[in-house]
Length: 457
Image 1 (tube, helix red, strand yellow):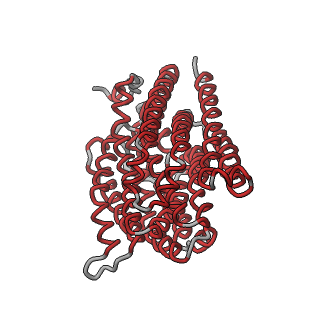
Image 2 (cartoon, rainbow, N blue to C red; image 1 turned 60 degrees about the horizontal axis):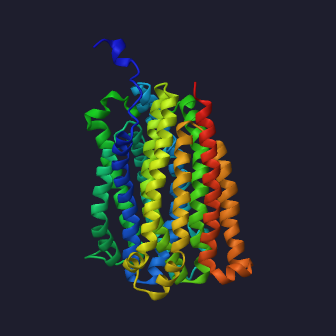
Image 3 (cartoon, rainbow, N blue to C red; image 1 turned 90 degrees about the horizontal axis):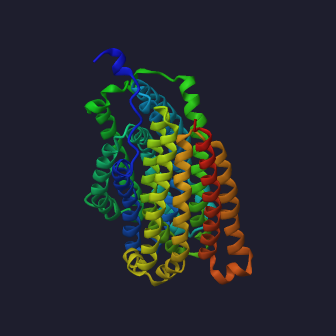
């Protein structure tokens, strides 16, 4: 093989249904494993007490805001590396990974103090002193794991971009296998280790984060598949590369922060109503998050294939895979929403034995099923737009629909209207959030269609 043929861009990747599902399957398993970590925390904390469950719920909500803000920046690496990979620019993949690792260092310096000095967050939540104590210890623990979590996410972003999600899947399954024993160890104590209760979930999470980082860094050096990529350790910061990553990453992070915070802040807004209301909301939030792993995996896979097609100079094929991904995603989302409604009693019963918590959860399941449908649609459209390197307008759409309509509208409905008094605070927030997501999905889908049509020859 000549040097010229070795560096020639490959043909556009296969984008049929089988190819899409083959890429999505390990991503879905990986995301389900990640969600399984949160489910384990919720179930194990819920079995201790409603106070432990509420403390973990509030702590996880705050951690989610900080972590997702950083993850939104890191996600820019997937479409950028996907374009490189589709165009056959393999060395550029590793160079951009190295630049993202430098950005991760900055994100760590910004994020860790927000978790460690958590008093303002918890005072704003207005929860009881017992709940605040558990949440504070939880946040201090996950602050220690945040550096490893962000650096690992950069490696995982590249794995998806170069059609190697199996590596991420295996590591997440190993993490899932260790979560229960680590939770038991730190929640209940053993030998010299004290029993930390719900806060032990945070310590276990931090340990797992560092395990994943060590394994990811080792695999990058040892796996023959990655030898074609330039080592990320060989380059200092390059402003030209950092600028491209930030141009896509900052608005992407803004969109993700708005999306997640508009939902997770509901837990903080409900904290004043007691542990039962927060716990019921958290159970349904966990169920919806588990269901979302399916459209999330399909969205990531669709975005990767769209980016690879665009890198290979095949915009028509990129549009075709986007449309195929949308059809498959919405079909599966509808089936999952129906399953949630039909199986609501046993699913919620698996989380808690507290009748008050269960009653709150059951009251919002119907809205949650609709929420899931619109969430699947807007998520898929968002991944497609990132593949086209469009991120700023989606951020504005998220802000208008999710913060203004969803979060602020939910607060007004729950606490300042007669309708909210009849629905209940939890149902009021979920209704407003669902309406906000409906508007988000419609706007992002229309934008994705417009952008993809503009790129056609």
